[in-house]
Length: 409
Ligand code: FAD
Image (cartoon, rainbow, N blue to C red; front, side, top):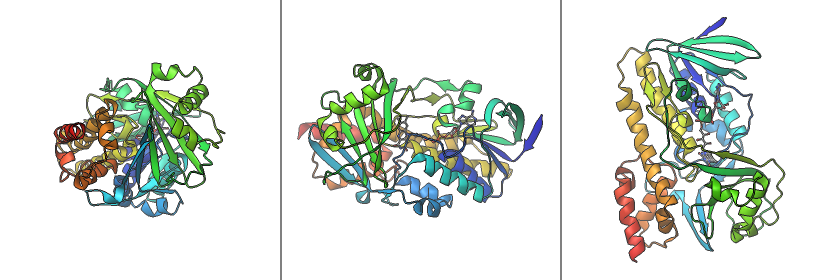
């Protein structure tokens, strides 16, 4: 069998894999990325958070992304039963970029992957990882390509395979997520939105008028198109129909303000569904491997934290791996898993509070307390690792206190 050797292997060329690859190549390591698909390929998850811009800058990819003409995103708008509120990322408490992009992932992911190649990473497209032997000093992966098997060998493997979850499955690391099984039904549309109040610079999150655990995203792109999706308990969504098209159209009709916004929309692409996407693992790193992005823990789409967490995981893992490959001792728990999880826990607190309705109450509450709004805004902009923000340092306690204030006033 043909054998291909490098310092590091990365499974998957999505945002986590591309960023990790570029950061490693920059430090002089030979990196092979093994990617199942050919790019561009469709992927869901189009609304970025401002924190991502820091990762892109560090990976020297900001210029390529900025010149692609993606829709600027400067915040998030929320709507429920006619109540509308919005957060401007520029008002955030944390320092750092105050804008980001809403991206068609097919093109965004290709830009990142091409840029990683420009920086010296080798990507093997249409190669699917089938087996993995992972040891402390050596890793061997077998990939299938056009019916043939190849062996990829390296000193370490980063699994950035997203929902493919290659190593969690092969090394039996999967554990149940804390979140219930939810479903999402979505597509891209020609939106034809004429409403003046609609702000193309923001993701619009609409909460279902009666079922507050059902919500919709509307993510406008720069070319007059948009991503639209509904998220909720699978059984509840099933009441709108069996076929994804029926579910999405009936779901939109039952949210009158959203239906009005989309009255002229042209649904011209297949409607897709995905469920059971929340996932977790028993450990994020072990001898010879670390899990990046969705291959580790995935929470929920509601605050668009997926790509941000993916990129942050790549940055943290590469810092550790560079040290380890250079001969230093690395405590992966202390230097990778723990700091990564700190930010994930912040998002998790807000996601839980979203679905139990408490955080929705906070969002739609017209607070005069500007400083608190700035702190919440920071989380919505992705700055979940900035411990100078009290809502990052003690998310549950702070959020519970805020929920209480909002329900008393
Ligand atoms: P991916 O982008 O999934 O990349 C993984 C790559 O690995 C793929 O290219 C795949 O082909 C490859 N691969 C898989 N298996 C193999 C194999 N066996 N061999 C080789 N290659 C393989 N996030 C946001 O930030 N904003 C959003 O608005 C948002 N909305 C979402 C909506 C929904 C309904 C869902 C489910 C998720 C959403 N997310 C969102 C999350 C986002 O999609 C992911 O967090 C993000 O894509 C993770 O990036 P990644 O690099 O870890 O994985």
